[in-house]
Amino acid sequence: MCGGLVSYLRMCNYDTAYAGDRGLEADDDLLAVARDEDRTLVTRDVALANRADESLLLDSRAVDEQLAELDAAGLDLTLADEPDTCGQCNGPLEPVEQAVSTPEYAPEPSAVDVWRCRDCGQHFWRGSHWDRVAETLSRVRAESGAPEERSDEQ
View 1 (spheres, rainbow, N blue to C red):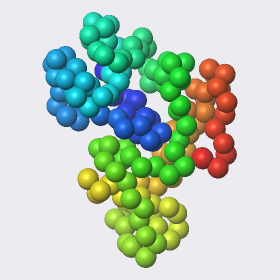
View 2 (spheres, one colour):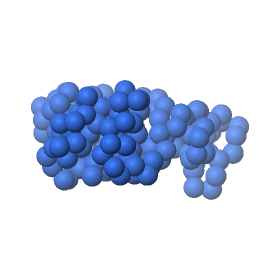
View 3 (cartoon, rainbow, N blue to C red):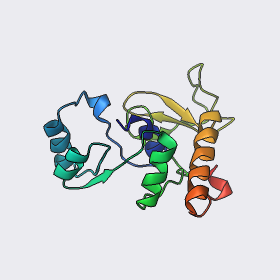
View 4 (tube, rainbow, N blue to C red):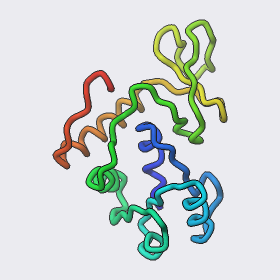
């Protein structure tokens, strides 16, 4: 129910496990993963949040409003200078060397910094999606009164 937050949190370098990626549906399974992996459960389900050791209960359905709730709860929603978490699968990222070719969908690493996920092989760079996420996070932080992100992070 909070799947729209996943890529935002990963782009802020949070180690984010998503139940949908793991095929988890039963509350007991979610709680076991949260406990076994020492995770904070982010949910809109009051009963589930009450059963978790660590949880953040969100009220809103809209991603922007959920981000504002996370910001108000004290999460640092600043984009990472050097991303280390894959937005697709949560795997570790590694920089792609300038001489290495990239898939057709990705820019050449000689032109911009490019990272590759060690687990799923997906390539990432600071492009239009990065800019949209930066704008959203900046707006959320501004509306909450949090300090703006540094310009070198965008």
